[in-house]
Amino acid sequence: MENFSPSACIELKPGTHVAKVVLMPGDPLRAKYIADHYLENPVLFNDVRNMLGYTGTFEGKEVSVMGSGMGVPSLGIYVHELFNFFGVEAVIRIGSAGALQDDVHVRDVVIAMSASTNSAFLTSYDLSGYLAPTADYNMLKDAVAAAEEMGVKADVGSVYTSDFFYHPDKQVNQKARDLGLLCVEMETAGLYLTAMANHKKALSILTISDHIFTGEALNAEDRQNSFHEMMLIALKTAAKFE
Image 1 (tube, rainbow, N blue to C red):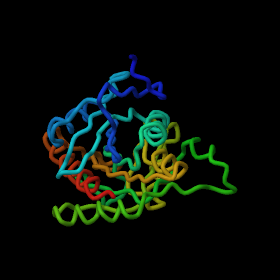
Image 2: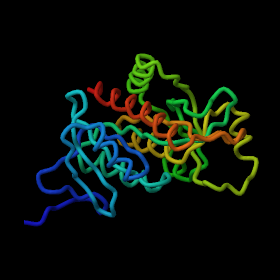
Image 3: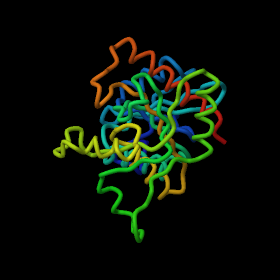
């Protein structure tokens, strides 16, 4: 019998399932790396469009990891379907970001409390005024505690989610910097909005890979070490999810 899926983008392989908590890097190959190096007994549950997804365990807790693709529209599709079709209760984004503030440095971990955005995604929610995309507090608290236990510097605050990697307004990053936003990336606001709309939980944990204003950037080795810290914080947060 053919394996039925209500989703056009995710099709569970026979005998597989998705955990209640899913870690989502943008790159599906990073999802594979996390499954191979951090999860016990990982099993591939999806490979439609090569958006690889795996379910395994970490510290005795079942956790899934799956790529989201780049940008709010791609992530929004996968997160909506995970929440609505596959029983997922929480998603943790793990990705890179460009620092905007002088006291946010490459290798820092940023835990996003909220996300401002230029994405039209925000306008689709029929609220009089502007909806504020916000993290789940308990997950944020657990992530901060995990970072402190690990001795990792974590900056907690608001980030800027942009639909543009190359924005036509050359001053946009300066404007975000002046408003105190910690860093710029491309998915967090979409994740928080989708979670809020579906009465689910979400958190975004980011590694600073470069600084927008100083030009400082991680080399390959430093990038891998810093991403390791972010991944462990995310996994420890997922392991505490009830």
